[in-house]
Length: 173
Image 1 (cartoon, rainbow, N blue to C red):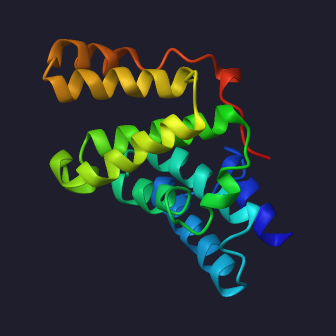
Image 2 (image 1 turned 30 degrees about the vertical axis):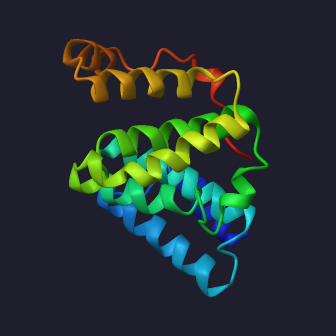
């Protein structure tokens, strides 16, 4: 219950810790550590912490924290089985986040170093999704533009942002 309340406080702008992103990041690390110590790192709460951590890190532009959070939700990550049970819109968002991360080459900015992971991601996309939701459709357009060298389209997509309606991506509960 305490960990649920801690996460809820992070997501509430009025209750979030003072000190900006660094304070929020420290709180996320603390929650994840508590989940690991209590052997709850494979639980629905751990998955929710990971997804919300990825969302918050993306908003803050913290690629390292974004990767840390997203890693537990995909592939063989400890919370990946939980994420597979979430509604399609949330799974779509996770795949989209992963694709954008890999497209830009992760924290090193080296897209070519992720070719194996990209192959695994595309296999996951074909197994779990058709048709693609708005988040993954946007990520696919961005990936295609960047990989093909169409910088005008790539920058245009980045500038516009995803045209997803706020309610089209559900928060996990």
